Length: 118
Image (spheres, rainbow, N blue to C red):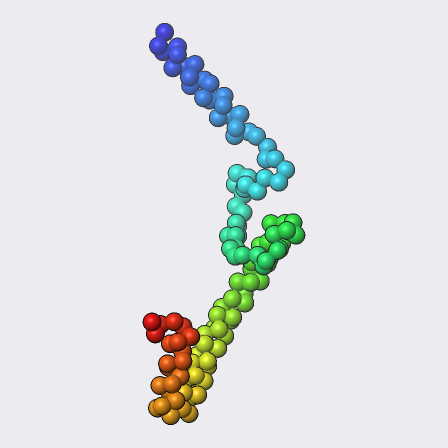
């Protein structure tokens, strides 16, 4: 009796697995077929510009926007760093124009405005 139960279990399992293996892919199914290798391109990550989510973009459009943004982000970051460096140099050179008294007065003014002199 126990052997019969094990046989039925294997038979049911065999039918289930056999039924799944023989299924045809559904339309739009992106899984590769047996013996077929499909290069899957990793999804680009990013953030859409403000209000663009309301445009109803397709996944393809969203991926294209992310790729465009990623293409320019490194250059933009380099330019931002360059701007920060130039502003620091400009500030240093401006401060060199001031006398010691003017530098002290400017420091007092900035402390008063920021509220750190309390």
